[in-house]
Image 1 (spheres, rainbow, N blue to C red):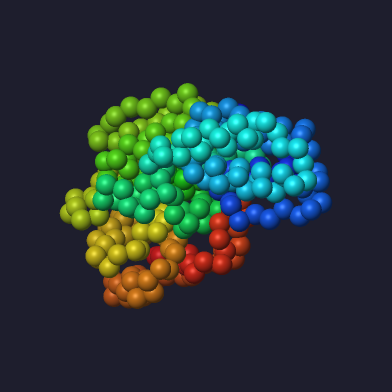
Image 2 (image 1 turned 60 degrees about the vertical axis):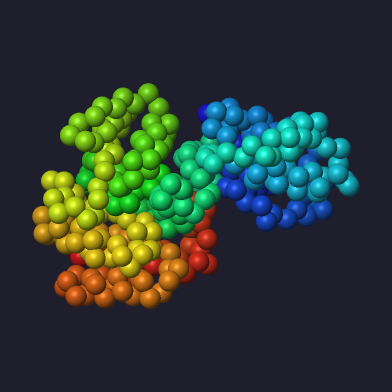
Length: 327
């Protein structure tokens, strides 16, 4: 459990949030550095370097090394630097060559450092032939949007396509009053990581295998979670009938547009009231246009929804993006 720092403000809170959010491009003013006495540095260390959560689920070592070095560079000309800061930086520099492929990111909800979602992931674009082993910006964006519109999800069955490491679904399950959430992906390593991330964010939860799906029974929540394989190229899709389909950054390759549209069409045929929501970061505009054209060709309509800035999660509102409702 993270310490309750909701009453804290100023430079200490800012530095702790930046550390959790993986922000390196911070700037400290002279008056802020003056506040960072030995005691305040001790508070920072206890909330970050010595935090039980981060010790159990460690963040990226390279980021931590760069962050602490930058903080110390700010402090040295003006303050006595805490011994623990030096000690941790030396430890990270000694182990710099042992950087792990996987680490944990801790996504802060509502800028409340005692309320985070912990995700095991990587910062690599592709690992073992899949892009699903990291959280992409669109996943954070649609999670934020969903919590802002939680009434849409109340008592609904949700199916996520291309769930990746699971941030979107874990956020929706935690903060929206859903009936069921089914995570899907087609890569076995992604599915294993998904199930693991569900388990660490819902501790003391029992899981069981049923019909090729890992099911979780959540204590203190009246909802079900499932993790299952789903290949969009399969002709026989699982016999699910969701109320809502969610997808984040699933429109990235022209080759997957036709199978994706087939999946959408199949589930819409099963449920005329189905609502489909996709969040996309537009990296290649032509690919995104091709997806919209494929929807048009199938007689599927779409609306562009607005999410102008971040509310519950930190994400880059300046990036070119689109949030769609398909029906």
